[in-house]
Each structure stands twice: as structure tokens, then as C-alpha cells.
Image (cartoon, rainbow over all chains, first blue to last red; front, top):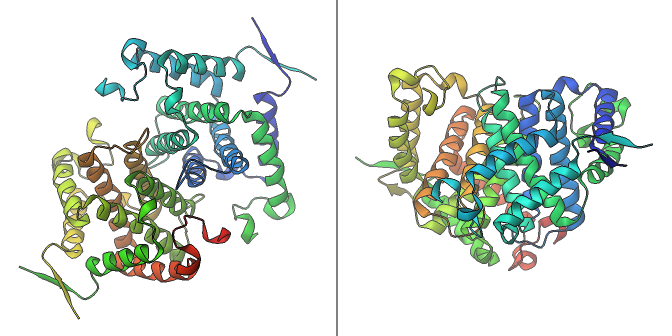
Length: 112
Length: 112
Length: 112
Length: 112
């Protein structure tokens, strides 16, 4: 079975790669620097929720975009596919959190 | 023009939504809690690079997957599309970092 | 034996408490919000090292100050003393990283 | 006026320096690595508040201790005093958040 979308991650990856190439920025994008960048942008996203849950949605989208941008660049750098690694990790998480024990509880797996 | 992929973000979103529904976890996934979760997972990713750049790639993929999982859940919660917000933000970033001034430099836009 | 200092943490704690009281901000300083604030400020500190180690020292001091400010407020909220908890944790860390195995290595304790 | 305490930051700094020296770990403690470490530990602290405010206090103290440990090491590396930089930053923050406009509000200074 095949899925079809008109705006795809493939398109995003190409746009990001072009953006980076034009600026000759790949030299800065070591895996370690990209991991730092993900944390930095995650902090900016979190700042919108610092004192409560009523964050400005347009700002949330912008900061979330920054996090995902660096995630996409890191995946590209590692030569892995985001969809694939999320599904792989999900399979492992399903094992750690069986429905019968985890249902309706936010308890961490090692305390379930 | 249409892009075709066999593993798509649509498939990932469905798998994550099913995983969350089975466990009745949507109640914990407020935007604020998801923003915290992204920061927490970003910290775990960063830990792999704490003392240097030679991180274990399998572990990097796992932690990157966790970050992207929560990003996908937050996007779902906000009703926005990750591809779309990344492309929108990229358009804005292109303006802030014109090729002629930003090329080969890691300087922040406000100091370019 | 007693140590004497002219600028002490006691003085800092009082100055911070006064600052918060004047603005009636204790209502926002739940432990969870302070934990978020520490992460947010840690991200701003990290941003100074995003692309390399040559950060502006004056800026590093400012962002480090922000992290420590929220740490001090969280300690105050919990009624614990920063010196004491650091020394307690250090005693535990000494056990996890015995000198003979940990010397000159950045390996995590569970892989030593 | 002089403040006297029996457990002081001076004592903590000495204990940490000794711990690091015994293990020959100063080589790993570049400012950039310490900034990463602060973010990583801040993430572990935040994890205790991931789904709500009812964190285990003993665990909060441990993770807060880790954050402050790395802050102390970074201050040592920069040759600055934590008390001093917190007070300096506080003076600046007082200007940005005048009591009459900031009282009882969590609004960021640029929107006050």
C-alpha cells in the first residue's frame, strides 16, 4: 500500500538542504551542534509556557518549527528517516507501556 | 506535482494517535506538558554529546525519535502540519539571513 | 571551624526574596514553573555555545546568573539549602565514580 | 556588616574542586561542555514535573543539586562568583521590571 501527500517531508528536506547549501552552513551542522540547537529551540518553545498554558499559538508554531527544523537536519546528517525512527521507537515504547498497566496513568514505566 | 513515499508522516501520526488512545493518555498531553516533554527529551539527546561528538548513533536515533514524537503530538494538538510550519518559518529565516551576508558565517542575524 | 564571607548566599537570597515580594511574584513561582524556568535559562546559556566554545564571557555570566537565580528560588520554595544538597549529592556521586575506575575518563557510571 | 555561615559556598567549591581533581576531570570541563551539562541536568529536573506539579521532593533536591554543581563548576572555570553575578543581574532585572508596572503580572518585560 502507498500513501500520497501533496506537501511531503521530502519537499521540506529539499528546501532545508537548499537553504543550508546556499549559505554554506553544513560546516556548522555537526551532530553535536545540532543536538545543542534542538535543546536551545526546545527552551524557546518552553518559554511560551513558562508561567501557564495560555501560550500564543502563532509563536508556538514558530518555535515548534525551529525544533523540527533542527531535528530534520540531524536526521539528514545521520542519514536516517524521521518517520522510520519514530515508528521503531514506538514499537519499543509499546512494550514498555502495556495497555493494561499504563491505561490512564502517567506513571513512568519503571514504576508501573 | 505529487510526491510519493511508502512510509509517510500520515502513517506516523496515525500510529501515534492510536498508541495514545489505547492508553487514554490524551488527558496528559496539554500543550504545556508536551512542550516540557520536548525539552526533556532534547536534554536526553544532548546527553549523548555531553563530553564530545562521538555519540552512539543507535542511541541518537532513539532520543531524536522521542523529540520528534512529542513534536508530532504537539502539532496534532494544535491542529497544525509540521511540514507546513517548517516551510513557513524557513521563508522567514531566509529573510533574516540573506545569502550575501550569512554565507559561511554562524553569526546570529542581529549581529550580521 | 567557621567560614566568613562578606558577600554571601544569605545576602543573595534576601535580595531575591525582596525583589519577588515587591512584585508579588511568588504566586507564579510554583516548583513546576521554576523547574521550567531553569530549563529555559539553561537553553539561553547554551545558545552562547551553539556553534563553538568562544562565547562572550559577559553574556555567559548573565545567563548563568539567570539559571542560578531560579535555582535559588526553587531551593527557597522547597526550604532546602543549595550548599547542603550539593554536598549530599557529591557524596553519592563519589560512590558512583570511584577514583580508580573514573580517573581521566568521561564514561558514564553505568558503563565504567 | 558581615554574615557568618557554617556551611558556605566556599566549602562547596573546595569539595567540588577536590572531587574533580582526584578524577582528573578538569580536561572535560570546557565552558561549552559545562553549559551542555547544565541543560542536560535542567532537563532531568524538569522531568520530575513532566505531567504535573506533584514531584518527589527528594528527587527534586538531587536534580537541583546536579544543576547547581555544574553552575558552580562553570563559575569556577570563568573565575566569577555566583553571588556576585546573581546580584549584578538582579540590578539589571529591577530596571526591566519596575514595581509599578510588573506587580502581580507575569508579562515579559518587552510586553509590559
